[in-house]
Amino acid sequence: MIEPRNPDERLGDDDPRGGNRSRSNADAGGDASAGSGRGGDDSGAEDDRSALAPSRPATPGGSVPAQRPIDRAALDRVLARAAELQMNAGMPAEGALTEEQLLELGREVGLSQDFLRQAIAEERTRITPPSESGVMAALFGPATASAMRVVPGPPERVLAALDRWMQREECMQVKRRFTDRIVWEARRDLVGSIKRGFNIGGRGYYLSRADDVAATVLPAEEGRSLVRLDALLGEARGARVAGSAGAVASGAAVSTIFAVLGVMLPIALIPAAIAIPSAWAIGRTHQKTVERSQLALEQVLDRLEYGDPDARQPGLLSMLQPPRRHP
Image (cartoon, rainbow, N blue to C red; front, side, top):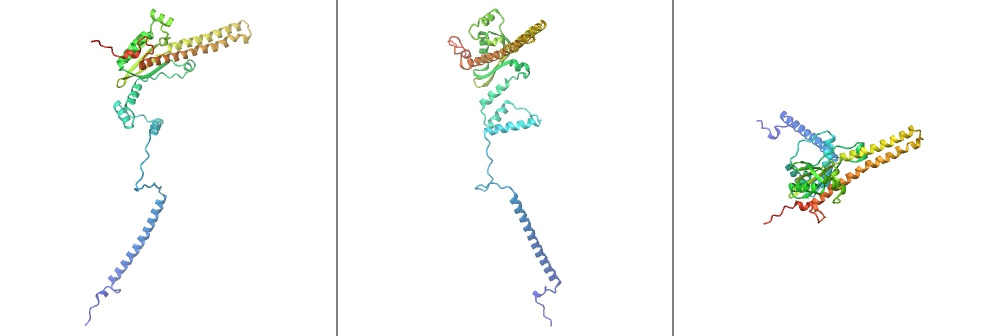
């Protein structure tokens, strides 16, 4: 009688299935070892990459530290640089902002709303004169004088006070009148000529030498107004140019006559040599006119803001006060 074989021996070396399983186990072991080898290579590569990566400063909590905040000076530089880069790249500015959007933007960056409104009002009244880069401006000076300031009082009252002052104290008369702007010119009547000729009041009446004087008044903030004064001096500069040209022409004519009469050349050139500095001196007097007109505009704004120091006459600040109502 044949005894059954031990179950443990059923899948021995002689069993083909056992041999296959052994080989499978061997293959699996080989693959696992190969995988572990590749894993070692991958981990080594990762270690190399981590060594090459830039290191970040560690924080106690293990997180990346927050970026350093930008102060106001740096913000101004960043915005100016960005605008410069966009302009150099030829990219036009997209769209336009309303006053409310501009105020909201200023609020986000921490700008004062009052200063923003004042800057907006100044931009509205900004007048860009023609560029004077030629010989005329270099030799004789500019043809305009301007002044601008924020003064107390509503716009309509400030403009009315300016009108009364210009007509009464500066010997001017209204040339054009608009809602927020008045243009004056010098009085040409007998009274105006006498006041300017004898300098009655001692003011000099330098504004009356301008072609015209314009005032633009806009609201700036609560109870205050932005005032811009402009004096055009084109005719005054033209008169100086004509005087200088006349001096040069006269000197050249006299030198020519001397040369024709046979006077020695060094002596004949003396009138022309004298005419050149004389023409220069005549032309430079226009610069003094511009400076005087600029000072007169600033003085008008001073009286609007602080009052007239001369207590004998009512000043511009007193004109801004509403009239008293008697019961």
